[in-house]
Structures are given as C-alpha cells and as structure tokens.
Length: 299
Image 1 (cartoon, rainbow, N blue to C red):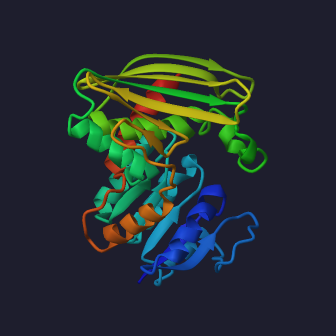
Image 2 (cartoon, rainbow, N blue to C red):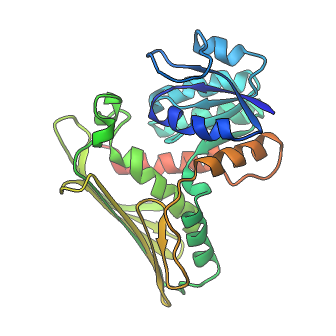
C-alpha cells in the first residue's frame, strides 16, 4: 500500500479523494489546504510537514497552476512521486522548471489529464490509430459556457477568472489539446484570435492547430444559455467520431456512455508507483500542452 498526501483540498482535490479511498493500493496519510475544508482525512500543518512525512510515498498537487513549480520542486527534491493537476503550469518557463525538477530528481511523475484513461478517449484513439475513420483527418472542438468561471466554480476559485492562471483555455481547452497530441502527434499553432472581458481572461477564442496528417480547429466562447457545452469531432474519409459531455463517444461501430475517469487515473497512478508502464500523462506531454496553450493566449 502506498501512502499519499494531497496538497489542495478544493474541487479537484476533493473529487479524487473518493477514488483514492476506494483503491486498496493507497492510504491517504494527510491533506493540506490553508482554507478550512470539511473533509474526513488527517490534516497536515503545512506543505512542508506533509512533504516531509516519511509515510507519504506520493503527493497529489491540486493547487492553482501558478503554485505548481515550487511544490513540484519540493516534492521531487524529497524523492517522492509527483502527481500534479493540469495545467502543469501557467507559463512555458514554469512548465520546463517542473519538468527539469522531476528529471533531475529521477522520481516518477504524471499529470492528471483524465483523457489519458477515459474509455471514450481510448476508443477515439483506437479509431484513429487503426484507420477506422480513414485518412484526411480533421478535428473540431466547440465549447460554450454560460458564464466563466462556471456556475459551480463561482466564489470558490476566483483565480479561474483572471488572466494570470485562469480562463477556459487553460482550464478546459488544455484537456482537448492533450487528447489531440495523443491522437495526432505534435502540434504547430497556425492561427489564433482572442477576445477578452473585464477580468482580463478570454471571452472568445478561436485557433487552428496543425498536426501531422490532421488540422484541428477550436471555437470556444462564453455565450449562450447552456451551463456548458462541449463537442469534439474527428472526421476522416470513411467516418467520423464525436465526443460530447466530456466522456460520451458516438460512432457507427458503437457508442460509449459518459463515465468519469477518476478511478482509472488512480489505478494508473498505482502502476506508476510500482514501476509498471502507465497510461497517465507525462510531464513531457503536459509541458507540450502548456507551450500550445500559452501560445494561444499570449498578448
């Protein structure tokens, strides 16, 4: 059994706790957050105390992205496995700092992109890699939000509203850029356009990414009455496949109903800790996503 510590007990930290508790390979040793949180786990007095606890083998970092590099360096320096929330960082330089830290320490590391293990995303990857969709691939992502931050985020994570480390491009589009990298290879940013609101974060974003053998277009905006709408479609010469509601896949060969990937992520984290191959997103992959996202957002 592996001892795990959790830094950041907000939405993402709390979301993964149930899956960690349900996995027999893990024991939650402690969590830390400077804010009060009604969570039934032991609480560390500080980040430093949590990282120093000899019972902790792995630290899950679920704090805002601007804090990631400092914590990653501390966890890696202590020789412990690093499991970090996405985005890896809020700048390419900081993402490279995170990557350098885990490389130099030689510790296992991964980033929590759920499309790494979600059944719909894995099936989409099969359809692309096995040529089921055909050739001449194109991909398109449409995102709409009634408000940003989304209603369930208001008042809890104000950093999501600002341009320094928030906005829907970092928070949501990054998931699909990660998936596109897994599907098509490495991206080149070809076009982008951004409109920003009163808080400085984007209200509308359009971009075109060029991958080997595939053009990926993105159309995202804060508009409409739906709390959230997401649609990711990959078309080929033979057929097309569509992911909606994050985890629903529709294709003529058979559909996949929506299913969160939290428990799959935790299972793969145990494999990482045991030295087995893992599907989890690597720091290298996450740093490439940051490069693309920050390229889209740059002034």
